[in-house]
Length: 176
Image (tube, rainbow, N blue to C red; front, top):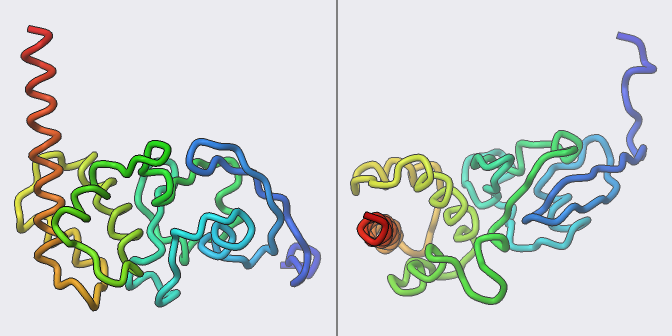
């Protein structure tokens, strides 16, 4: 490999992506992590950085609709992609159903890990709309929370799954 193919530190790249439904452009170095880019260049501070090794899950975002660790992704890899953060779960000022359930079930304490957990839960419920308690616990094993224990989080996720299931049944009954 020639030295001309290696980017020097300090060289900036324009990255354009869709953040929570809005196209955004900012500049970053080749080595800048997506988590830092989202927080510092784009101002979406709900995404937190914990371990910077992909272990704790605090930095979880959706990349093209799939949960991913923003601390393991370079910002330049997000060029042209859709990135959704915890800020995108709300509709305007109204928290999303998962956020409301977390509040109802007291599934957050300090809140540091909550954004990443919410993003993983949102992705998981799209793929597994009727999870069991054990399945939710297994999904959450990719997150580290020091404050809540996991019981209230599991209860909140199961509550949302049940609410969505009932809403779907009501809709199907109304159209029958």
